Image (cartoon, rainbow, N blue to C red; front, side):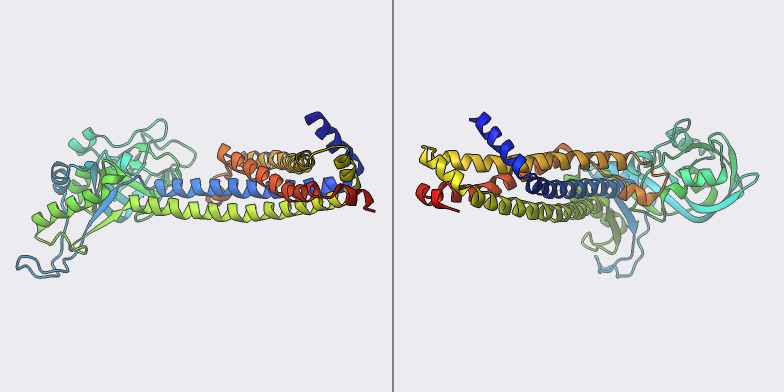
Length: 415
């Protein structure tokens, strides 16, 4: 049966080359649209999520605030300032927390080498900051460690951008510089990363020193903020409640007073980013799917024309004993074959475009990291093939039903 179907399809294709080619082109173009839109949407989604992850994972950033509620006889309007000893207290008291780091901040810090100088945001942090904020060291260097903190060493970790400005064309590791006039040694520079979510500027333009060294030089009594990491995203809400309870007891504010201590839930930012980027991808997929649907309508119209032109042929087959399912099978097979052939050609072209664009180096251009970063996944391919099968089936089913219902006698009289 399959041999007969193929022979009939090939014979019809030879007699109606233009019609078949135009139909296949419509499907090919629709497939290219779907695959490219979904691939670029997937690349955009990954870039947006990775950009948000550039600041860090599912962490909580704690900031001191000002009370807005009266609590146990204490008036509203009292400042709440976080201290370095609050971090070990929280890690001991809140079981949902895994690790954390304090952060002393100082804007406008002057960094100077023998030949160049710049100003930047500088922070005094703990070793856990590396994993919390994804500030991993590039090859040849390291991040700040526990010994640096214990011995109050004058060592600095530089963001990749500021390291290039201060030490152009050479490695910064092991070099010396003046930080607000105090000599420091560079122990590492940050690996390049995409970062869209920020806290006082990008990490690429930041200088990090041990928290103990910062405190010894500048004498700060209060930390800028505290970063803590819940053991899992599911425990983030309970961790926040525990943090407010512990800090409320220590500083005398109502745990329900949101203004007394601000909490930036970066896990919630990640969740919203994934939802928004997923919505963008769905929108692009719907646009591409509509384009492919239009191509499917074209296939259906072509099959209706085929049925009309081959009415006498259908009458002869019915008169010779062909059953309705044989007639239906013939036209459904032709529609599916046209759809899949055009779809396969479109998939090959789209894949070539995706791989070609993805191979283009971005040259450090942040815009290209988001736009020229398509990703072709198996899920995209399977969805496209599924859409093509559905289009071919429905495009051939209704004309096939019409052909199968034709009266043999009337079909033989058809001119």
